[in-house]
Structure formats: C-alpha cells, structure tokens
Image 1 (cartoon, rainbow over the protein chains, first blue to last red):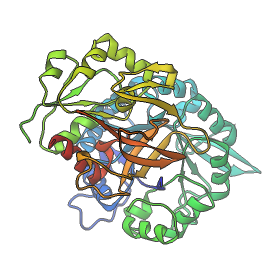
Image 2: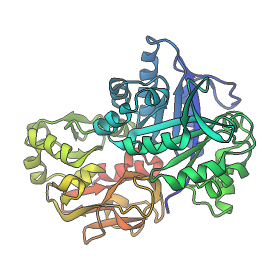
Image 3: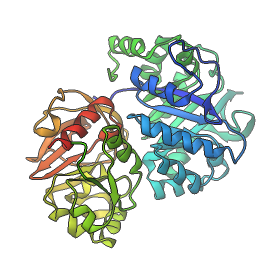
Length: 251
Length: 196
C-alpha cells in the first residue's frame, strides 16, 4: 500500500542548518549533510531543504550542499527558497535534487509552473503555498508570510494544479508554530479538490496531530521542523504510533 | 565487482546524478556516456530516465541509441521512464518504444491521485534482482503511467490496480521505482544487478 510520508524540513543558511537543533549525538548539528543523513537513518521518507540565504552569490553554497546531500543520501529530497527561473531549477536538479519547491515566484509568475513542468516534468515541481485564514477566507501570502496577495487559496491551488504542479505543500500560517495540530479541515477540502498529492505543514506538536492530518486532513504527507529538530518527536516512535492507528507507513 | 565498467546512458532525459551517486556509494565509478562504443564495451548498462516519453524517445533517436539499446547483450537495467521506453508503446503522447518487452504502457485512471508518488510495497518477487529482498518491502515510486502485469513481471505493486514494479527478459532488467532513492532496499537491488 502507498504509505503516508513523514518529511522533516531543514532550514539552511550559507550551507548550514539554522534554528536551534538539539542533537547531542551529532558531532555538528549545523552540518546539514550530517543532519540529513541522521533523519534518513531514522526513517524519514523525504527531506525538504529550505534555503534562507539572502544573497545571490551565496546561492553557490546551496548547490554545493545539494551535491553533498545527493552523494550521501538514498532517499528523495526537495530544495526550496529563492528559486525563480528554469535555470535555477536546472542547476539544482543537475546537482542531484529530486524536486524543487517554488512559492512567491510562482504566484508572481504562474507560467513558471508550466515552464518547469514541460522542461523537467511535473514530478519535480512542488508548489508551496502559505495562507492565512481571516474574515471568512483563506488568503495566499508571499515572502515568508509577510505580504498579503488578495488571492484566494483554493483558486490558486486549482490554478497551480492546472499549470502542471506535481505536488502541493500547504502551510497554514494560522497553525504554524502553534503546535496545536495541522489545518485539517482545509487540508481535507484541498485534498479532495485536487488530484495531486498534498503535503500538510504547520502546527505539528505531537504524534496525534500527524495521525489526524492523515485521517481527518486526508494529507498524503506531513512536514515538520522543530518537533523533529528538538527531538520532541522521534521518527521511529512516530511511525510505530501511526502504524498502531492503521495508517500505512514505511517501517 | 568494484572493477566493473558500468555505463549510465546519458541522453539528456532528467537527472542522472542520483543514479551515478548510488553506484559511487557502492564503490563503483560509473561512466556517463551516449557514445555507442563506450556503451557497447560496458559490463553493465544503466538506462535511466525522468520526464516525458515522446521527448525522451526523440532524444534517443538523435543519438542512434534507439537502435543500439535493444541489441545490447550485457545486463541492462532500465529505471522508471527507462523501463517504460523499453516496452512496445506508451499511451504517453502515443509513443513507440524500443520493443524489448512486448508490453504496452498505460496511464493510471484518476480514481486516486496521479502521479503515484511515494513509498509503496513490492510483491510477488522473482529472479536475481530481488535476491535477499523480502516481500512487501517499500521502494520509492514517482510515475503517472504503468506497465500492466505480464509474463515478464518479476515484481508487482498495487496502486489503483496491480502493475509491474519490475520486468525481466533475457539480459534486460527494469524497475518502475527508483532503486537509487529507495534506501537500503534499493541498495540491495543495485548490488544484485552489479553482481549478476
């Protein structure tokens, strides 16, 4: 049976992981490659690397990182952050990334999705969407949640699918950081509306939240950062728990 | 095993780095080439592929690789789109394939999400590629088209229906999944291929 995927997300800056990471058993928790290998070993199904490097020239370190990760890892991984042209994507895929995630650049230029899909295939195009629920509607935000667009979440996701997105990574800004669970009602609506996989993001606090997002939220995969980085949840425990709830996972 | 010449066919169809790195992790440095002589001289040939079928076939034709591949006599391993191109035809853009496997590639119906993306289980394992691999082990798939189960099927998988996860005929082997991205199970399968 196709399993539900557990995806740790690593924020990287200048080739190193950021955010407090509490790993006593790693020599260097800031070493993105070592951390990635640790998660793969623990049973992560995929990894997402989000590059938060601001300057263009530092992007080279990202390509080097992708190369190192691809050499080391034998599970799929996605790279996101600051990607705005097919050339950017070509460089990352050639370095060994399996998929790229695009966010603000796709909203600003939706044709980017179809350009990437026709050149590299839909399977490597993840469209990441940050949205906030307010005044009775879900609105898409850009620039890491700092810029409101006036665009309706459901309209945008349908458009992204139509243009050739292979997967949707949906982050609810209302839930992100709360540790109160994922935006399951909305996820379920989105999941039923589209025919491509959807990754739930934002709100993971305990193992039950993962079970809920797979059952109530009908998500195909769940992404989290801090609960994994601070070892509040360990992946082998999480997978055993999900299995005990009859949720198909790879163990 | 480590001094074998493994050639990965390079025909500009998607990311072949991951496949190359997977062999490097096994201690083998593969050669990446589209040169007929280099490919013919290999001990083993890898035929990868990610992308669109018609486009990839055109790319093979440009290099005469469509003629070469079916004539190869050493073990050949097709991966993902590589496996689909080794079949007779594909519903994807009505593409004529290499005809190594007398099978037709079909598109998944939209009963469930397409592409079939993620980790799924191998069943009904047969043959040398799966030596030491247990039934129901998970491997990583990403595809929208599938090869129905047939006589050449040496592993199957279920998504919407039972389909071929792996094919074998004579010296030709093929995986619909990505062994290079399938954790330790994938490593085992690649090792088995190298040890043929």
